[in-house]
Length: 285
Ligand SMILES: Nc1ncnc2c1ncn2[C@@H]1O[C@H](COP(=O)(O)OP(=O)(O)OP(=O)(O)O)[C@@H](O)[C@H]1O
Ligand SMILES: O=P(O)(O)O[C@H]1[C@H](O)[C@@H](O)[C@H](OP(=O)(O)O)[C@@H](OP(=O)(O)O)[C@H]1O
Image (cartoon, rainbow, N blue to C red; front, side):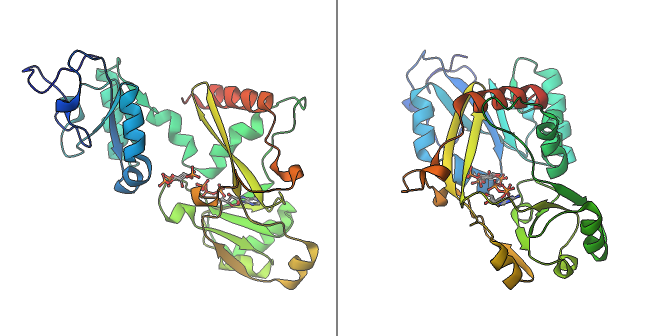
């Protein structure tokens, strides 16, 4: 796409934010990314540094005005969004139909099953990656849709071993969807609020790896995580404990002096196969 400078009479993006067209070199080609994000996401993601880097690479971020028809805005090369709701979904589907030349990241139907922690992990569970470079699996888990009083029985029947990590079933980016708890004893499980996923706690040395995948690009970071739970701790503790965003960006362990047994990154070939397989199964970028 060609974007002309301010003096140009031709149509340019009308809702451009955080950038001034006047500073752009005339006749330079830019990829225009229209974004529809919550204000929280704009704050955490669209940092001046990212915008500067993007601009140097010929990428411009332009805010989509949610109060105006999407088709009246742009033109965009890419629509980047992280909003939920039926209405927004319909707007995007209609836009994709009428603007097949625009890449929508990602199409609503493709991300639908990522909004639910059960379906989100299903394709990982279905993956049958050979054990050449390491195993990929999902912790044993149980979905509770309703009735908190039924949880202790359901856990016993499923044979899940305590402690359990309780996660809201819906993963829609809301603060509530990130509220996780750790349940140490069976009795306290009744205090949890369905719908949720109960997962066996997997000891992992207090460090985890976050793997970011965009297209062919893979980036792995180390983050501090919950410490291992020992048998002694399990026998001492009871109750349900809410825990905060333990492995957030501020908990980076990239430069920490870690025991090599927990610090070693997953083998690259495993990540590549995992990334390829996930993209194929999820049909997302
Ligand atoms: N089964 C588990 N066993 C041990 N620790 C776990 C387990 N599941 C989650 N955790 C811990 O809880 C943290 C958050 O888990 P998870 O990523 O599932 O939630 P989230 O709300 O999607 O978080 P984020 O959006 O930050 O990735 C992990 O970083 C890890 O420290
Ligand atoms: O900063 P990292 O470690 O990559 O963790 C991200 C989570 O994985 C995302 O799920 C968060 O986005 P949502 O809150 O929209 O789900 C995302 O929220 P944010 O974009 O508001 O920071 C992050 O918390």
